Length: 208
Ligand SMILES: Cc1cc2nc3c(=O)[nH]c(=O)nc-3n(C[C@H](O)[C@H](O)[C@H](O)COP(=O)(O)O)c2cc1C
Image (tube, rainbow, N blue to C red; front, side, top):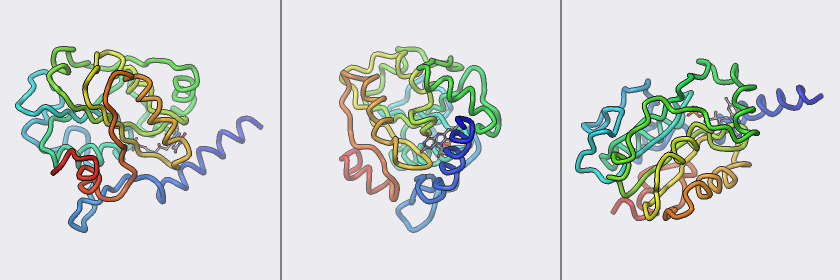
């Protein structure tokens, strides 16, 4: 019975995904951003690791297994011309993360902290004053590897802006709260809820 419920939940999440996931961010010019492959995002500052911070004071850090969150992250970085860092788990997930559902559920339900591959030095993160943090919602929460990332740094006084992609909005606020709880001394701005990334960035006064 429990197994049936879990399968149902995942199936309904997958079904709802097409309707609810802000996975194809509106580029603001009537076009839809196409998710790229890892490392494909083109930006002078997007070398993958922010170990050598540029002039930019904003970092977009994200985890993505199926490229939806990457599409939003890439669009934010493209609009703002910021650095971008893809959070990678030290132990990769299956190519189809649904094949790793048991592991992901265990991590989420037990608050585990999977290790991050190639964590940037704290001094590199300290150079940024604004941090966008992106994740899929996995088992009602941000991916735990994103929590590992956040807990490695002192983000006090920095602007932290969580954003998510998801199958349904049911656990969106819960996921936002989780990031806020992990960064209690940060300044939090409103999250992305779909549509034009450009308009959202203007609404939260990150973009003039
Ligand atoms: C194992 C697993 C669990 C998931 N759990 C949820 C969930 O609890 N709530 C939800 O809305 N979506 C859930 N999803 C759907 C993802 O959040 C959604 O597909 C997301 O856009 C994937 O982002 P990505 O392409 O960047 O990996 C789950 C997906 C997987 C693979």
